[in-house]
Image 1: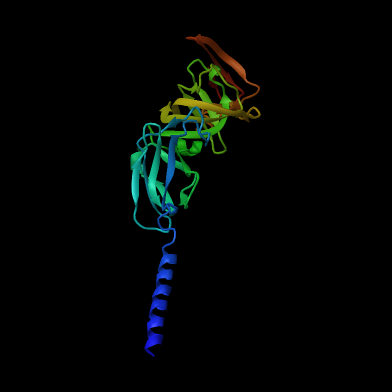
Image 2: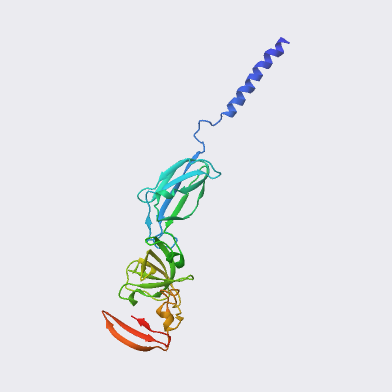
Length: 285
């Protein structure tokens, strides 16, 4: 019995030592998987309403970006974009996250128009860094909503040009969409240019203002994206044209037929006519 006990004990010890050696094998060879990664964020201001980053746009420094677990929970990091509108969020643990922009950091006149990938994944041994594009923009409204906005508000609208910039000496133009029409004052083309064409498909960035009691977009900056068929005027009487049909057709393109001219005279650099189709007089400049 004593001989059996002296042989079993060393065998048990050998088994335990072998097991411990297997569990620690390779622990000091430097092959551990990285437990953190990075996310790159680029913030830009979409100045022309193209909904994509191009030469007309500007990179946006000073935007504060927060990252938190996608499933919910507290913010784990908040960073600020640099002078080039970009920031690299480093040392983020492996997992799924949601990015957000603090609205107070972009000013009152801008909106967060789009975030390309609001949810990102940090994966082990990633060979590339996820890039998230944040597009800022001005409030984009229908023309009807722009006409109802408070004076001084800076907005963007989309529509078709009714009259080119070259049509009037005071850089006035007119725009329509499916909701209504509006006059553009002190208008200019992005990138320069003396004129454009009726039917141009454009975005317009301007400040809500008024002229002769009607809403306008002042300092209107037009960006042309395409050409569509020339707009068709609305046929109305001279009496209706004199009041823009009670204001409903303000800045609209109209056609008045069979008028008789009763007065004509030079008025400054312009020419003034008074005419009627029998329903009432209409002054034409």
